[in-house]
Image (cartoon, rainbow, N blue to C red):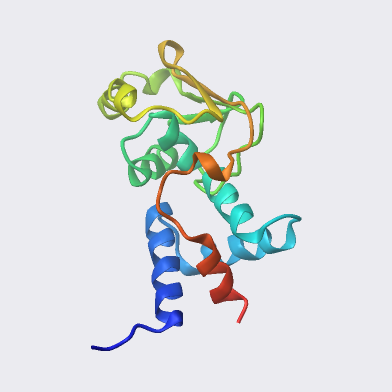
Length: 162
């Protein structure tokens, strides 16, 4: 039986995280470089920056049923951040930002269906959802403990530190 190398395991973990967040290689590398420059644990910084992307936040708030659908909703100009139209999925949300659905887009079937199913999935504690008004607010920065996906960020850090 063939033993899988550490490099292959690390590479597989990176590819898994890229696939989860729907990112290209270059985007992921830039995110890692930014996380590496920040103070603190690089792996946690990386996950926090990935969680703080607007496409992920729209998904986490329940405005979309997947991150891919969230990207599409964003690109089609359905999302407002602090009252201004934003259509860039990699936009980094900050504490206090208000993410809402445009008035014209509130009747969109895909958005209403996603909001109905948000009760099953739940909203992370770092976000606050006002379902009746199609709004969400970023209360705090996301923390590692709230990310329930099986991600081993240390493997990604080891891969890039070679």
